[in-house]
Amino acid sequence: MRSDASKLIIQGFAEIAKEKGIDRDMLLSILEEVFRSMIRKKYESDDAFSVILNPDRGDIQMLHIREVVPDDELSNPVSEISITEAKKHDPDIELFDEFAQEIFIEDFGRRSVMMARQTLAQRIREIEKDNVFEEYSERVGEIVMGDIYQIRSRDVLLNHNGTEMVMPQKHQIYKDRFRKGDTIRCVIHEVKRDNGNLSIIVSRTSPVFLERLFENEIPEVYDGIIEIIKVVREPGDRSKVAVISNDERVDAVGACVGMRGVRIHSIVRELCNENIDVINYTDDKVEFIKRALQPARVLSVEMGPNGRNCKVYVPAEQVSKAIGKGGVNIRLASMLTDCEIDVYREPDFEDDIEISEFAEEFGNETIDVLYDIGCDTARAVLKMDSVELMRRTNGKIDEQTAEMIFKTIRDEFSEDELN
Image 1 (cartoon, rainbow, N blue to C red):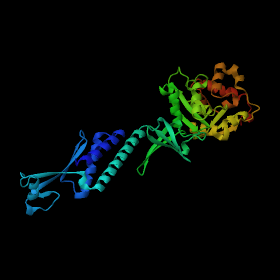
Image 2 (image 1 turned 180 degrees about the horizontal axis):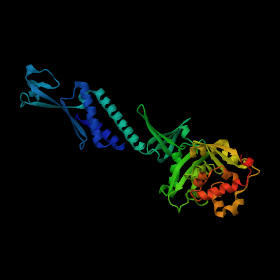
Image 3 (image 1 turned 90 degrees about the vertical axis):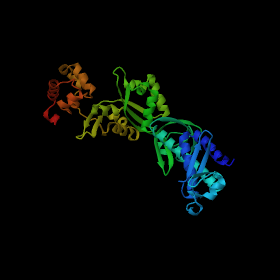
Image 4 (image 1 turned 30 degrees about the horizontal axis):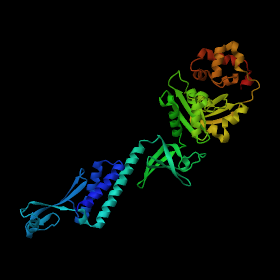
C-alpha cells in the first residue's frame, strides 16, 4: 500500500516516544505538525488540507480538499479543481461540491520523507530534554547515586537512570579518587540550559550534600526531631554543623554522633575522612561563638559594636586549636556564626582571681552559672556590665544579685588595677 511509508514512520517514532516517556497525544500533535509543514513547503499553504491521525491503526491520512468550479473559472489549483478534472475521479460530483483527494507521503518525494524523519527525531529529542529538565529541576538538592562512565581532565560524567550528569572539578572533594564504573553518591546542585544543551550539575562539595547525608544516616534529623540550622564546609578537611533539638528529651549532638560515633563515622567516610564538628545551636551569640570554635576552649568573647566582629580570648596552648590548620577552624567558625572572629592569647593578669574564690559571697549556684557562661575569673566578669550579665545568664542572675557581684569583685581591686 502507498501508505506503508507513513505507517512505518509513525510506528517507528511511536516506539521511540514510548521509550522516552512521551505521551500519545503529544506524539500525534508533533506528527500532524510535521506533515503539515511538508504540505506547506510543497503547496505554500495547508488551509485546503486535512490531516487525520489514527492512533489505533498507527497510520495517517492526508486529504486535499478543493472546491469544484467551472473550467473557465479555475484560478487557484491548490484550493480549486475544475469540474472536468473532478469528474474523472467521481462522475457524480457537481459544481461547487467539495472534492477530497487523498495524498500520500511518497507524493512529496524522497527528500521530503527524509526531512520529515529528521524533524520528528529532533522534536522528540527536544521534548525528552524538556521532560528531563522538568524532572531534575524539581529534584535539585536531592541525593542521587550515579555510575561513572567517563573521567575527563576536569569533569566526571555519571549515568543516572540513562540521564547524563556532570560533576565539575570544583564540585569534587580533592581527596576523591574515581574510577570508571564506580557508583558514587552526590547531590543535584543545578539544572540549566545553555544554547539548547541540557546540563545537570551534581556536587559532593556542597553543604547541602552534607545536610542530606545527615538526613539519610540520622533518623531524628529525617523526622524533624533534630533541626539543622546551618552547615559550613571546607570539603575534605573540616565542616561544622549547627543543630538544635525540638524535643528536650533528645540530645541533638549525641543523636547525630551516635553510639561510639557510629552514625557520624559513616558520614565521615563518605566525605573522605572530613572532620565534622556537630554543635548545639543557641541564640546567645557569645555562647554560639564559643561553641563554634571547638575543639578549642574559649575563655571570653568581646563583641564589636555592630555585632559583626569579635575578639576571642583563649589559653596560650589553645590558640593553635582555635585557629586550626591553615586557619580552617576560625574560618568555618566565622562563617557559621556570621561574625568575623579574631583570636587572642589570654591576657596575663597576675592579679586576676578565680571566680570560685567568691563562693562564700555568691553561693555555689551562682558560681556554677558564671562558669556556664565562660566567666571563670573575676576580670572575665568585669568585662561585662550588669545588663549583659543578666542577658547572658537568661535571667538566672537578677539585677540585685548582679550589682552585688560587681561591687564585691571591684572591692578586691584597687583603682589602678581596674583602669
